[in-house]
Length: 223
Image 1 (spheres, rainbow, N blue to C red):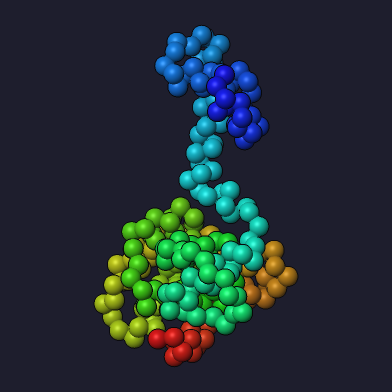
Image 2: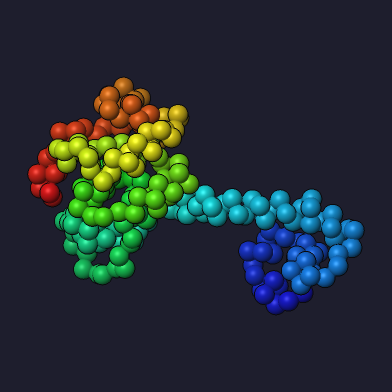
């Protein structure tokens, strides 16, 4: 077996020695024995398919602890895109692309003050609509993005914005399950949040205490 398989700890946790040898033979185009073909179809392929699904869905990223350093990177990037938050942080970070920044906020750092920045970001910056739609679909946050895009259009106070087409797509492909825009069903105040969610959020199958008047106040500051 080659060193690249022997030294890869993650591979050795998932596959046994015989499985790794079979994978290597297959990659080299060598003829497999019947027992090796059985390994390939019954064990190796299902594991590889599961690994690809995990990668495509970003599950590994989602289960990592949301740490302070990520939030600092997000806040630094927000300032770059025209939404400065008060912070004592002096360190400079690499700017996170806008589409990835929005997804990171909604999936890994769903703090209310960060979520509230998204409608402003969408109005002050040009966004790759195809990229953000693709990310929203893969991360199952189409309702959250749709609600925030609708908020952006509301703040723009005009029809025919560049976001209208994206909003229509998200409305057409709305997810049916109710989700919390910030927090989760396990939160202590989940029942209270569900009972006091504004109607516009409910139309997007969302729960949370985000109010239009608060977004308008932020728009007065940042737009």
